[in-house]
Length: 303
Image: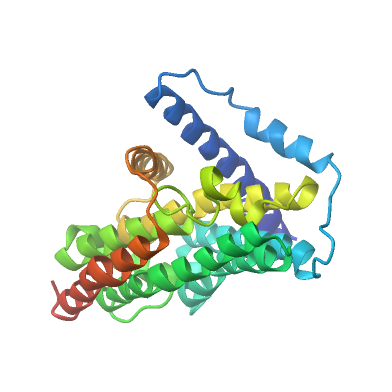
């Protein structure tokens, strides 16, 4: 019964959805202030999701089964990640061996769900968006995994979230080292791409592709995709906190660190233009991958 509560209520599904939607509101509110607008009320995202669940689901002619399956696949994966990370923070001693590897695999599924959904919709604009998303994943996954490897090396080979947190508790936050600081910068760039935010929102690109991979979605499937993105906005900063800022995880410090990362995400989003997909690939396979390799080498040297 307790396990069901942890995965469905706190710190799992329900808690992550609420925090994710509130984070989306902060994003919209800060963006509005930057643009000298008032912005929506705090409950606007909740109203939008409820309204979408009441709309009709329109399936394009010729769409395959993956069109309706992919939103739920992506949402299930981020909900599991939210539960694993939340339990890792609340009870590090209860985390299971290899949970870091499981999280890395699950974090790929939301992007794969977008690719599946866009490709199966039989819409040419959605296919272009899916193609861009696929290329973007190939671009950021390599440096992202290399930066995580640097943290594993710093944590004496630990692939367990609890062990990484305990290592930081004893020896200080990973970001306080050269390898950790460089790996953090790499993960920050990759996090922006995983969240599909500017400058890496080319798969949706509203001004070019009219929502891209999501152009044919409506009703509950669209609501599920939006919920997945909201939960990702909760999950990704929390993941970085565990990897790099795990020295003090009291509730007050967790909230402060999360809000700091959220503000950084919003500022990057509002101060950069959208990149072309070829520019994004050059960025990740060039400078970002080089930084990730440097972080791995420095971690191996104990720096």
